[in-house]
Length: 294
Image 1 (tube, helix red, strand yellow):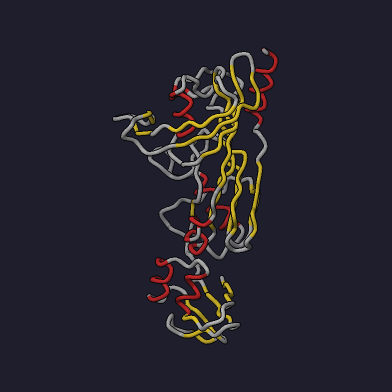
Image 2 (image 1 turned 30 degrees about the horizontal axis):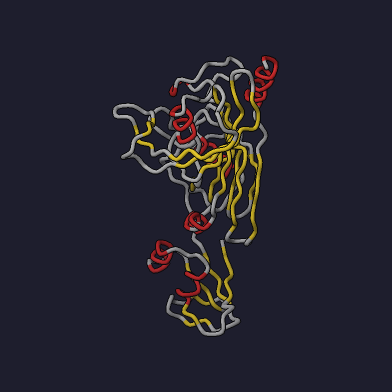
């Protein structure tokens, strides 16, 4: 894979300076020093100290990323929302883990994305997870397709929004939940604790039903179980979220949470990319059932 960078300034720059100016990380520069990738000028390999004059270009060549043999390949289909040479955005179904773990090593989204890349004969087969979701949360999940893109994740300024069905009614239609979260000792749950990590969730009520509410949540931090733990702390756990005490609804027998919106500033195209994922059938069925009760 190749990227062309131009020195658009008024003074000469070293290749190292020009690469850093274009978002190449220190880690990637270190790999270049050790022969992993190369930089060409007029089709000739050049060192990082080589000078690039104003108006001149260089070609940054990434090495192919071979598949990790420890990651099993699953050929279960994935729902691709967007794809280019740098990013892969998928719509994750509820019930599928994001990454391999103790309970599932063979059919997580990482395994499925690997299968998709293998089937499409992609040049790079290493899976770079940018955003992950809980196993029973559905919605948009972003992957970087090579290590250069992964190194630019901090520049994306990810704007993530979720739709959640919570039990009961909040007093205010809009608000901010600013409560630190910490893992409960000996358990998987997260609890509000002053010694925990800072966690901030903005919310807006979209619909009020007889015994529940549809709420849009915007994450300002990305803590594990953040939305679930925050609303449980307010005594409004998500519907069907058994881990946090939410009331069970057969129409949607998993936590009623969907990552429906993702927007980010693409450092490659310099464009704002924005995507939406429609509610899955189980959440649509839940909302229809709640509307009948209202």
